[in-house]
Image (cartoon, rainbow, N blue to C red; front, side):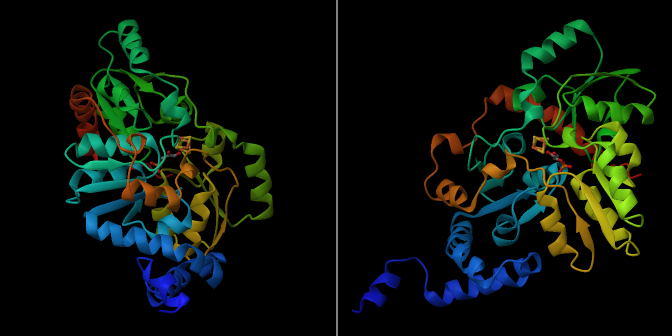
Length: 349
Ligand code: 13P
Ligand code: SF4
């Protein structure tokens, strides 16, 4: 047996399989400048992950802020927090691999507790989720007895279990308006709370969390951009400061941005005031449009890579498997069910 044959028989794939995989990747990633060589470098990883996925009856859910190798190489579903929760609640896969952050993987576990849920790197946190504990919520409830509590989905399971309803950026206003009484505690995103206030009659009592990505964008940069590209549409996430949201053509969730682009065929240039990863995803999705993105990365989202996805699927260590207390699951499930009943109710400017 030649050395060359030995090399290939010790690997789980053939040279042809990898060449086909590289060509598949290149057909999409070339749009954002990936070369054939770059695609062949990741092809063994994406090929093996996709094979394991079939063998394990696994589904890979990826948030839109993930890198293009994950989105276009291995993901079965890509979307915003609400869309991915809806898939997690209904999938018939045995294993859910979450390419996103921990609160999203926990949400999948709460909605499908019998499934194995894998998060490839447990450092994939979120500044909003880290800003509040279950005890903080209990203290708020002592301070404001009887006032319903709405938590943004960017919270950990113990926090969700203390709340009356969850929401995402795709239905926050509808969930707030759906609560009984004229006051609502909204946590943990203080900027999202500020963005909701002008659109509801409810008094909103807010927590003081912020997103380390979206709090960076200011109205001065937007004004400069508007001067340079007067015909461009500005799409901002509702985690941004109110001054930015006020100047945007559309403010909402990441999926809301996609829908806005699809529905505005006349618009050719878009500025995305959100995490950097969205730009590459949308460039592949809408190759005939121009996107000007920001270069602020979410350090938590970027902890997920093809290599740790592969190790989590092959031989997960305990930090990669989501485990939650049964009581916490039951409490958090009530909050999530209320959110899922409302569904998508995006307010697009
Ligand atoms: P979306 O639900 O809009 O995708 O937002 C999630 C998130 O973490 C934004 O920073
Ligand atoms: Fe959390 Fe902000 Fe990262 Fe979203 S972008 S996961 S809100 S830190």
